[in-house]
Image (cartoon, rainbow, N blue to C red; front, side, top):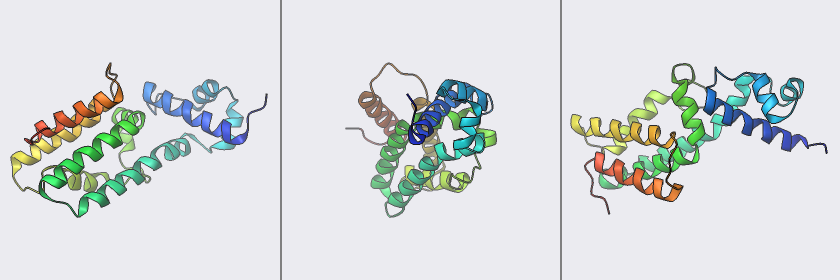
Length: 182
């Protein structure tokens, strides 16, 4: 049975995200992806010009959702900003856990990709929201700990189902930020 171009495209992306998460972007070849997707390298290259094009398609939704989260946080401050930032980061990291893992594995070569927002500036704005817009140095330390903890934990393997993991990530991040948990 012949696969449609749309199906093949989706299967290549699924193979790529799985292999990139398992072996890293640099540790995965186009031939690895083609073999895993059950197609020839020539067929893969029909859909994507190179490995970077695959990664761009995998990371673009992450960049868009990060920009949307940043937009929602811009008008908030205090407790509202901190809680919305935690909820948004937890949701984003769980939804894109394999992409987060890819970024963490190859952070030095992937951090400034054009499909992602300016990571340094975005990070500063997220830390600011996590602190509730507090200038206190201690609050910034806690915000960094919460943000990195969310990303590292979501990219790992867990025995908890996603709803429980979401609840624990949220509770842990809020505790780290010195906020009350429900």
